[in-house]
Length: 478
RNA sequence: GGCGAGGUGGCCAAGUGGUAAGGCAGAGCUUUGCAAAAGCUCCAUUCGCGGGUUCGAUUCCCGCCCUCGCCUCCA
Image (cartoon, rainbow, N blue to C red; front, side, top):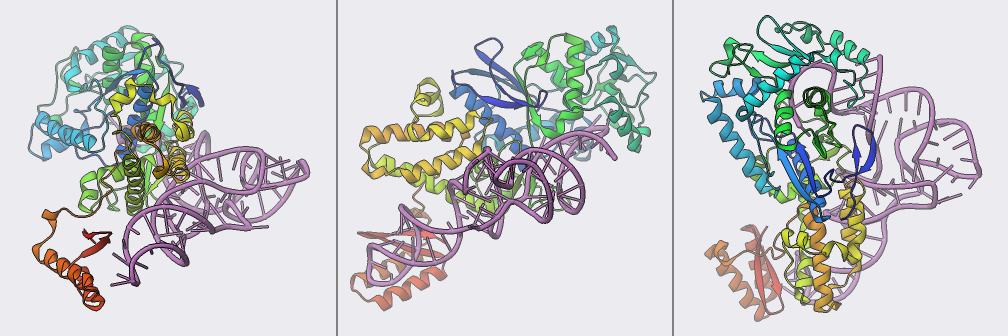
């Protein structure tokens, strides 16, 4: 087993990640609210969680990865109604889209992906226990709230003091106009009584018709699939407060236990130096970027190209950079193959092998990843190693070893290489272009340089570039 | 107002109390009929600004400027 040190939000220090049960690393990630397509900011979180999981598995520890789907909340209800669809139809469609995007990014699907709607009874049962224990109370309108004053450790994760919370309350006028009836403005809702705007989206409960509050689903599903004590909990930084703080309060009061042993939060993505927003038009989805000619792997490279605890400035130009960088690695990989390297093992094969113990020149890259998941430093080491290696001079055994090591690092980052041969297939080349290219080749053979250059210019005007090789030529789209 | 993160070459981005990784772009060379592609080489006396501590600071401390996040349902 290899060690991985990771910064823990609660203790604010890097701590070794290791399974409580000694064999399987059990962790929970807050998943998407399925009311629209996820954007690259969301995917920064999911991609880094995926890198984390790959790191753990390659380090010799099995994982149990649980990630929820939030399919009932204000936004899903509101937008499903606007779309004229049932909540179920609406959220299922966006869940499918989310899965498709994750697949494009080569993110492993979680082992368990529970949905909030499918766990209403568990949530109600948890509320009942909280009321019994004196941690929650029902209001006259049939809503139920968690009583923050009943949990002294509230605020510990976010490092917020009670007085700060009080200030937040007075500074935020929205809270004062809250339509629900709470004892204290800081208390949060566990069960929301049915409202006219909810339509048919309500469930029966001991407190009347209504629906669960957002924070509760994670606590209920964690108890169901991971129990009262588990290894790690993760999400975007914005979830630290109040979402994860509330989860801790609910779960520890309802279940006992320590809840998550480690907290892994990913910092937000910036776009062009600022925050993303719909009004600025910089909330990119994978489809938006695909329309601009950028594949998901380029996106993944960019997202993995920054350290998860630092703000990462996304620009469209960085996708071009990523394409070039990936191609360069791909060419090196091809050079290894040309030197006689065996095909690179799959991720599963790497997990089964002891490849991680024989990394050679790429050992520093692994060390970087082991030290708080330093993905950018690891990539730096990859390029340094590539520069220092002369693939052509390696025998097939050495080339195979090198290639295997390279794919351990790439596999951890979840990067798959593009085809280094960028020339176009016969079938994509228009006949007219083929004809001109052949004429140029003939002119070249006849050493009629003037005609050859003129034909090359004509091809360029049509958007094609000719690349001469030793004994022929290939075509590439500009 | 409170808490927290960050400001490093044209762009992206690591890093360390001992004199700035890496990628992209750019330049040169090799190659080529000329190109393209590729490979190789070069490319920050300097790390937001001003002080301080130190033999020495980009790295520690203080102040200031700017950006970003959270302060009750946003990854």
